[in-house]
Amino acid sequence: MKLLDSLRWRTKLIILFVILVTLSAAITIALLHKVREKYFHRYMLDMIKPINTLVRNQIIHNMNYHEPNHFQHLLESFNFEGELESITVADDSGRIVFCADPELKDEFIPIPGGAELSQGKLDEIIMRNDEVDPNIINTFSFIKNRRECQTCHDSTKTFLGIVRTRISRKAELATHKLLLIFDALGMIIMIIVILVIVANVHSRYFQAPYDRIKAKIKAIQEGNFDTTLEVKGPGELRFLADHISAMSLYLKKTRNELEMLHQKQMVRAGQLASVGEMAASVAHEIKNPAAGIKNALEIVVDENQELQQNEIVKEIFVQINRIVKTIQDLLDFARPSDPRFQGIDICETMRQTVNLYRERFIRNDITIIEHFDDQIPIIDADKDLLNQVFTNLLLNAFQAVLSVEKRLIEIKISASKVKNSVIVTISDSGGGISEENIKKIFTPFFTTKHKGTGLGLSLSLSIIRQHSGTIDAESKPGEGTKFTIILPTVHHT
Image (tube, rainbow, N blue to C red; front, side, top):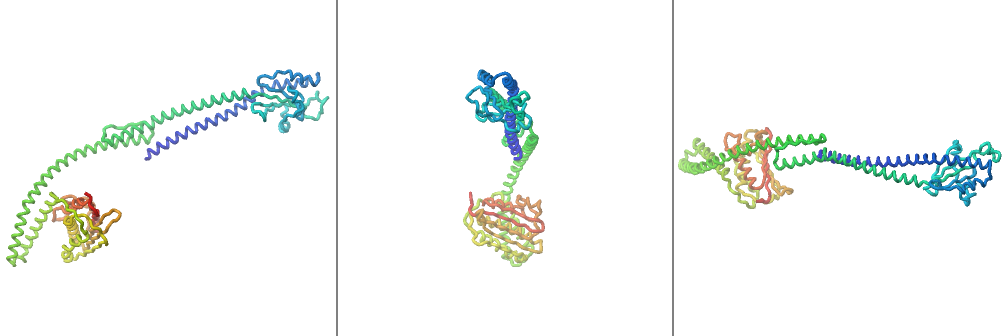
């Protein structure tokens, strides 16, 4: 997940980078547009200066040597072509005095404010965009009140008039438009180049390694552990590739070991199967003679009252019963019978099992506590097989508590509505089972007792599994042991 998150963040950073580049390019174009406009206006001022100078000098010359209408005729005869639209001369109040269009005479033009006059800009040409026509630029130059002009004009005036020149911006705007097109094309080309570079870097150092890692993982899932993985990319991808390669080698080694172990187990299983079949046959052959010996001994004892109290005879019965029990466990383990499912009351089954051994528990000062919930549902089970499981667990608990002072066995049966099951727990206050042995108690033939075959819990596990249930054990040394059985209310075949 961390790798995927890292790749997603890198993708987001790339997109953000492209957006920032695009915005930067757009801002740069806008700034260039402003700078170009400023320089274009400056160039236009440089072009208009000679015309303004010529007009002012001509006005002064006209005042000294000609009639006032002479300059008017001169403007009317002037051919305004190209970028120069018109030339207008106004007095200090803005009233038009001379103009190429006689109809505009005596109209007023706006004069730049007093700020330009107060800052001593009478010698400069002032440029303003036309308020009506955006394609026109107006330039204003002042006619200063010179000494030679004061013979006819008031000497207190700063300037006597103003010259307005109207210049077309069509060429400027066309140039701007063309430059903007070139700028946009340049920006698009630059973004495309950046995208190609970024895509190539991303494909080479991110996507390609990522695809190789995915392919390797898929190959591992299919069982191919032979190839190693080498990628060129960021540290996370190399780190992941190295670990996947190490994992692949480890899985290959583990698979080989498992195959060898499987072969050994198959051979061992075959041997055990043969031994089991032989043991079952031998047990079956021994069972009948042992039962005959027991029956014959019982007849002899019944006929002789003195033998009933003989300790040797009692021990013979104990050992014969032990032989019969061992033989029966071997037969049940080797050839388990199929359960016969029917509706049973599990609480009643448990009571019957406990009652069989209640007298023995009382004789050994063992307290039995039973907690059976109300309305425990009827379950599908084999009553005899469950009785066998409960017997094994109760006898194990009986033997466990004999070695401690507080001898207590607690049995609980409850219903679980969530899982549609019945839970049975059998706990004892015995010495407990070590952590190492608790893992082995369900293994066939494993036992920590001096007597017994070690098949009781293994048979119990097999029976519970036949009922689609589970059985678990919890224990701590010195704190006793608890077995938990969970059985479904309805058996599913």
